[in-house]
Image 1 (cartoon, rainbow, N blue to C red):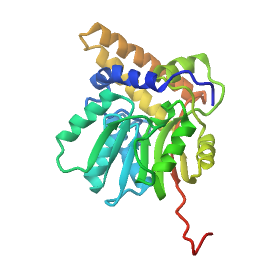
Image 2: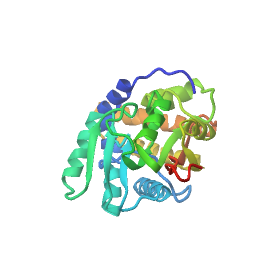
Image 3: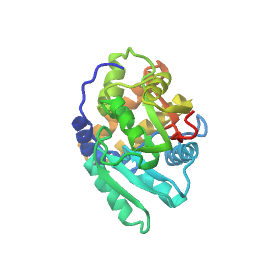
Length: 285
């Protein structure tokens, strides 16, 4: 990984300050993650983002008995969807207090779900050891400055035999151009990341067993192609000059992000890992 520059406070402040702008053109319901598209002609972002959630839930093998921690839960959609679909329960954790407020408001309109949302850090989780059957995340772990510390915390709060399943942005190469640094990394206060192989190595060092790893860069590129076009179109009908300028700048960044993907400087993937099951005294091996 490259050197770190942004702090957790920088990340939290950025997502607090930009929430309403993202909601105004990206998705008013707060779905703000990468989509899994049917093909290169598919431009249905909502369907693609829902497909990502379905794939991640299936890879994690979540069911009605699951107790799930969503790290970097954002606006809470994924955890709420899991609770509604499987009748499982869990907790969402995020650095952005504004997104946690949004998630709590959304949850209040859905009675009977065993879900709660907490403001907090992935490097100092406010949970006991061996608490959750699953830890999940979508496009958030890359933003944590101290990634090894987060891996240790995930390992700690997972039950023996528990599953860690997440989608995350990747840094496929150590050398990043100035263009990619500006439009990809610095834009969202992302210090640095792992390649797909590097991620697996880091998780293994934290004690996890790797179950699967998928490189999904094609879907990342399609996400930013669709979002760039959406921002450009909506800018034409936005009366607020500041919002219009932001959308046009974002659309320009989406073009540069696609170049960074093509140049191998930005990626996306899904990884599933498992905390080893506890060994009994009668069968220590």
